[in-house]
Length: 397
Image (tube, rainbow, N blue to C red; front, side, top):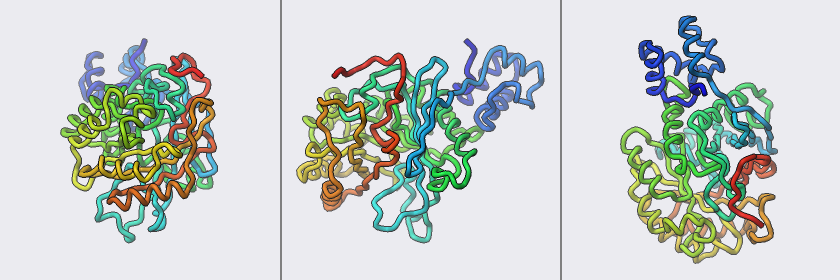
């Protein structure tokens, strides 16, 4: 099989040029064509000699995901179902957010985390468009409230497949008219990336890091690391490895799905807790290096009558004490893969506000994430890529 050029980092592309017997700077040219100009064919690399293009084409190709389906929510959220070369389906979501909200609006962009001196009425938020990126076909973790977990696990995505989700989305956004719901509600390009789509990013650590290397390269997409968030269900070794990378060059934001205030709760909601419990998880988070004014985001899916009590709020505040952090409260999003064995319900708006107020009263920065795209199954916990072949089911009714 030919080498997928979209799967190579800048350094790897230079090394690939060496295998063809040409100077490394030819690899620089190839990388810019693939990731800067995003060409689909080697033949389009016109600053390479014709015979060199032929040699590159003999050994490599630019592999791209196919857009299998596209849905637009009433709020402008856009979901893409993408098909890989081997027929697997994955989903990625574009979440638009317009100008700065009113001061009493509890929503905040969970990736930008601007320095405090920029969080001022004189510096309104820029329109932004956040993409929720998938890292696996399905998911190997069995979180009981999540639609993706109900699918089981297919395979890891390559770095090229992770990166190409961003490129497919950007091409679609660039072609939208100004009156399109996604454009009206947000920016005209993808501005922020969150790795919290299908799959556990830290389960696919090698390809995740290579994809981040590609996406942040100045000769390519040139995304700011400050506008990239990697979310994890709590893989402690992965957090520790990411922390080591963060000490050097890979300074991305960290989000952790907490979702419970006790190990007993979390064992049921997130079985990964049986391997790395809350104490072990927070130990790793406390050691995660943060730049000045940066915070770790804790995601907390709120389930009616399960983890939404005053006592839960008190325990959460004690658990997070001393960690530079904020809490995103996410009212649970129902999905059609929920069967009769899962008794979860979305809490009432009043219950959500009460829980948020209880956390705020204990000194935590807390934001409620409104459901975005839930009418097209694009909200948190709803991605299921229906029709995906080759998954290993983890649950049965």
